[in-house]
Image 1 (cartoon, chains in turn yellow, purple):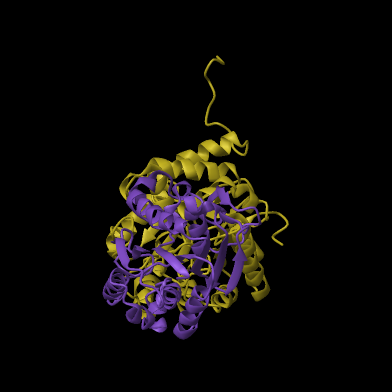
Image 2 (spheres, rainbow over the protein chains, first blue to last red):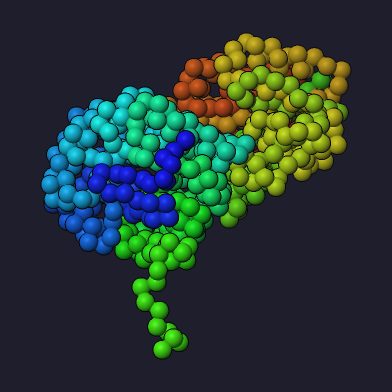
Length: 292
Length: 228
């Protein structure tokens, strides 16, 4: 069902099994839930990317439309916010993996031409032509689970007999569809998409049982950073969920997630570097204590 | 006098403390009002629970209810498999906590496209009984009441809910029967069909209404009413 060597290939980078890839969130929206548009202006966005790369990000995820409910953003406006920006990032950081968070095939085609390596389809194939766009461009695709919601809506009493089974069924079906449409098998990821179409208890269950998703063989992307399930668990507003984010991210990494979409790059990089050593896929930086 | 008491309650999963976890106290008043209304059904000889669901169905009193689908797998009742849809499961869960728990019980689920006249007719059929019936009507108001509603704010949601609340308070059966199904669906008001069953069931009675709770603390309209 997936590549035989388990290597994830995005742009010019390869991420072997057991290697963690860090994706920095760069919003090109004036109304993100978390940063409220801090990186909306182009100069600020470039500075944020330069900093994320310096701090250890392997990928950046560019979003031109706020995920939740908000002002309508036309395809033309989304293109205006993303295409030239992607081209400029590509020129500035030739090795950086560029992901674009979009559910529109028209946007996917044009950002791919501009140099994007991955389409992060947070709305689970709402636009059925998106897989064809990724296939034609030879770039990667994130297959997500939103519980059948329409783009940019919030969950109301989503019910699952088994939320993990539902996520596995949905994301692997989307991955198989992407494969059948010609998307590169080593460029397909699955994302349980915490919070989207899920209540907090369901997102916690997904985190607790992430090993079951990893066992599908598809590389798992997790995007838990500052989400409401962390906020509701700890009773904390968006600006104070960093520690909870690291806990959720660390457990996800331990249970087999491979790509991590985050706001705070240095914190996540440290946590992932530590877990890589714990898992035995990396060596400690230096072990002198009580050994001299 | 076949329908001797009726109660109207909302059915958010959040009403169940194990689902709400630390947020449970926020709905203490709604839970208490609902239990008081359901308690008043204990004077009946038999309970009929009406609620909305994706498909029409009837269940007997052994039918099980569970909230595992919402993350609280430890909460369940009934001796049979957990087949009850959410609205009826909340109704059964409320009944389990009252003196009405020992009464024979049946459940009816109605899909949101059930025509108003069919709902009214069903209400009349339920009332056409030799038993003393206690009717538990599970119905939420609009899920589009505020900017932070589960479904985004609809400008007509509040007046819609206020109209229903007034009709429950003043037992205005004609207003309940006239609630437009298309508007109710647009406003994501799950209670429309069950309220119209209530309107049909109350026709031959002199029960009077008492609205004891009306609020939308999370952007979904909740009503509790007693008819005694």
